[in-house]
Length: 299
Length: 337
Image 1 (tube, one colour):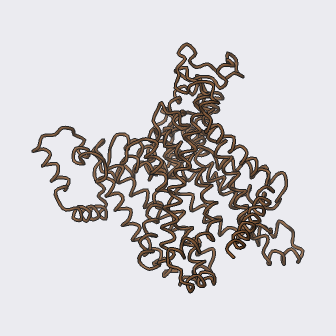
Image 2 (tube, chains in turn cyan, purple):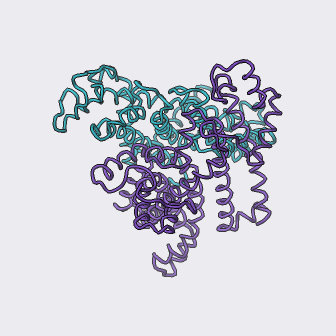
Image 3 (cartoon, one colour):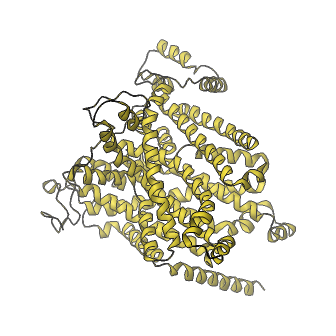
């Protein structure tokens, strides 16, 4: 009995997955985004092997060498070097690590806290819900970057604190989404059936209701992943995020800002890296939304 | 309508107190001895320390401190800047018009460009034009705007020499601040060329600040239009033989505007956050640059006051958007009351 139901489960899963992939792969741009993101992830994972130089190594006699395709460039330093003669390519590759990790941690933190708070708010209603939602409204009433700045001022500048601060500013979106889906799901027959069968509130919340709220949460998580990378870079640029000499992309732009005119590649290339990574994730997010949103599926 | 307004105001009250709690908690949560941090003095003598503690009210219980803080706030007293020794509210009010002018121009730019893009993309759905414009708007949406600003400065200010690098007005002109909006003040003054200078200074920051709202407006307008164009009444209009443009302009656009107005309203928080970066890059003397400066100079009363005032701006705009929403879509008003 259990064996057959679990094989049935697996085949249903596989069918769902196939259906999802069918719709997702319809969008060429989404697949392109996914491929580029996988490339960035590979770069980040194997940064030590792939990058041609140590990102912190200063080749003093080779300071401000332009990229290889420009006049005076050297093949040794494909993307050129910065004011201290550090290889830009290696710094950008290592920066991808920081940005991706920051994005992941921000999303994981805000998604988990937001989902739990949203489930509690949607399930319990009454004053618990009121308190949670008003706290979220309060966070939302301050522009995200400002809130993050103020939090970092309290926690102290640094990449980890920046991630925590950004995660806090993203939490309300997950709370609102989860609560809204819980409220629309909680009176469905399958939930009532599960309750009648004796399921406790925790089981109802996490096992019955949550999987059915997953689609909007996944889409929101993808979008948050890209904005988290942008916000981490923005805080780094303002000097409140990752601190030099860490090769975080925003920090790279900030530390080379004075060279903007004499050595523009030290500013343009890290920014291009941010733009491309964020664009790839957003392309993928769009594809995910179209594949997961049944309303748009048939149109 | 009145009832709707009161309802919305009622929801705002707890959020307002929430924000005062955050602002109040911010100062108490700062690392280090708050008295030394706030007084801007280090290593003070014990007598001076006690005096400052009493002066700042830190010797009272926390709830009393909070009540007196809220009392001060409600009377418009947001404390005194540690750097300039001027009331925070006064500083904010002086700098606010610069940010408002920048943000207004940015959102106008975003609407003027973004709305038609969204409309055309929806009407020509699936065409090369649609795909091209939507890809471009996704690029805009993914833009790290601090980098975008630097790129435009490299291109337009340094390579092409078309626009100034920073500030609101050339030093050659002395414009009397009347409204605080440089575009208007320069017109009111007799200085020849002042208006042109103001426009020159404004163009790049407004484009940079408007880029993300532009992308959002274009994308949302497109999807709102697509949804409306699939409705029965649009099919009826088409069946009646109305021209496509007439259907769009008279029937569809009005309903799509409901979504678009909300989206535009939501961009205000985005604009204020973006102003922090844009003003820093372009040396624009507004509240964004001011708040960054305050954070770095540890001017905590200024940060606290700025936080509260910016939150108030966002809340006010959200209220206005809610009311507009109700006006455009009467169903909402009747549903809630």
